[in-house]
Length: 250
Ligand SMILES: C[S@@+](CC[C@H](N)C(=O)[O-])C[C@H]1O[C@@H](n2cnc3c(N)ncnc32)[C@H](O)[C@@H]1O
Image 1 (cartoon, protein in one colour):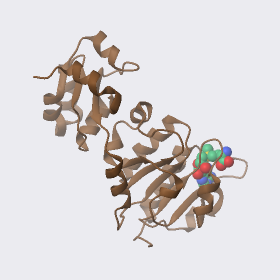
Image 2 (cartoon, rainbow, N blue to C red; image 1 turned 90 degrees about the horizontal axis):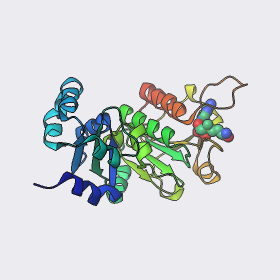
Image 3 (cartoon, rainbow, N blue to C red; image 1 turned 90 degrees about the vertical axis):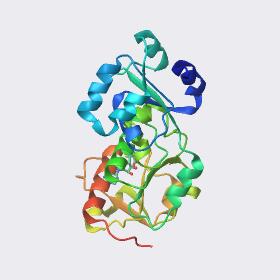
């Protein structure tokens, strides 16, 4: 039998931290490879699984090793209320690029252009998973697999495709960039193969992204308000797509 703590220390630098029961539950449900998982109280964790995730209960039973509270605390940046943590294998960039390039696409790709806020990125990945989008791409320096993003995304990175790319590497498809100066979204139908781009919290869409887009799209907003929060803008746009979305335009 392998030593889970030795595995943890060997893998921690290259793996995705699943911080808390819900992140582990989602990751396992959506097919993540989880080499090591720990809980301060296995019985409580499995009772949570009985209640909230009976579909993955047996998988969690096989994965979870009980550890002392101080050992658990030494493995995570800050203890989670469920006192559960695990490491998952990060999907390869090649697999991500393949999934993003796959056509015909039946749901949009969301692009966050140079996002700054890790919590926003996590919230967007959770939305993307909920709406079943093809993937979330970030441009710029933020790592979309940062532990804080994974925590914000509740482990749902594994339910979609998540990659960091340059603007030049964005997947093909009609590009719709969201901006308060654009055309009112209520008059538009967003195709299923759309690439939906959103600007950064501080400065909006980059020049490189603007140059590539044929469609600037606005969310309804009264004139005195400058803009919505990034993640809520993604939520409104995906909801609009879910109501009006149609066959691929290209
Ligand atoms: C917080 S806003 C950026 C505000 C920034 N100061 C600017 O100059 O655009 C982040 C992103 O959310 C989207 N967004 C926010 N409000 C929007 C609106 N009313 N219509 C379309 N997109 C919006 C845009 O993609 C925007 O770049």
